[in-house]
Length: 95
Image (cartoon, rainbow, N blue to C red; front, side, top):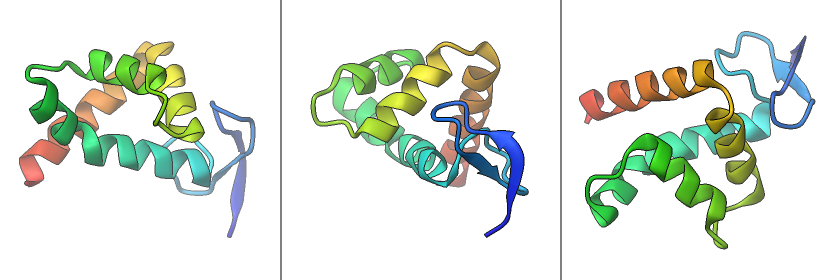
């Protein structure tokens, strides 16, 4: 597996070469899980915004460490939040 000199925004590990995400392999997987599960959470909680969803993940005792770290990074970076919103929009159109 090749890596680039870019560092993961969550932990400082190397970002995989060619990745569109600013995360290492582990945090990229956590990001994909966030995208995959947003609709389930939205259905369970009603009208849940992506920001509210990330805050709930951050404060949920059952949320894994890597997902919490990704949620925290996204909430602190407007560019990443916009990226997430775009991915969520794309994901909902695919279904």
